Length: 336
Image (cartoon, rainbow, N blue to C red; front, side, top):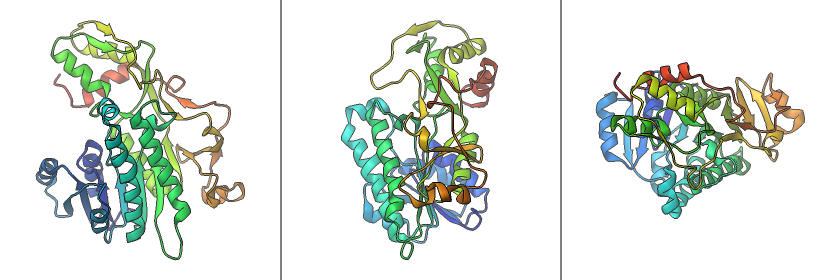
């Protein structure tokens, strides 16, 4: 579905944005506009990809008029822009509200104004029963994208708004893997918050496959969730120490706003959740497409989720220590 399409990525200079750009260039898109406020990373990407289909636009999603200009003649928007580092956001909560909530509404308004075909919001497992400001702002972003479809007038607007939600990309900025690597390089003890802690994990390629599949399948107002595996934090620690020198660990306790286990589909959401195309799909009961007599027509081979209370990292299939060692080696984050 991406051949000859005109794509825009908000926050496109981030790690996901750059990986998405590389993948989409291989899908024979017509053009990709990178919209971000980081000029240094834009220059880096321009030199890295050296592709005349790329356009680089400086701007901030809190500026609606700039977004409208950027979205002119665009077919698909991937909304990846966000403030995401939990401790920084806890100290500066309203800045996160301006970017992650008000900025997301601006993206919606610009899409409607310019009749974009599809808009995909990139969410996080931290939006489920959030304990911190970051999770709360991403929950609101999801709610805005899901409800935006209720405002679409089919005679005036084409846009289908879709959300995707997944856990940590293995080795991404701000995650535990780069922190462990930095501590090992400094010959320090690895810091463990709680030995029982579990986390969902997905590789960048798996995340891209999922996002593009959801984009292709989405009809508007869905939240798509991939079928993910999880790891125990102690297994990850052991995997590092089997690859590198063992400096021991230091148990520091769970930090404010942090969960022992992550949840991708909450207790209340399970009732509106389905299995579809190797993914889970959370539906909006207020959207006519998801009425019981229509949903099976709209999504062939869909199956209702039953017999589980929620989808959390403590009950998910676990990634083995040997697999974690391979993921560390393949991450490219450390020389072996």
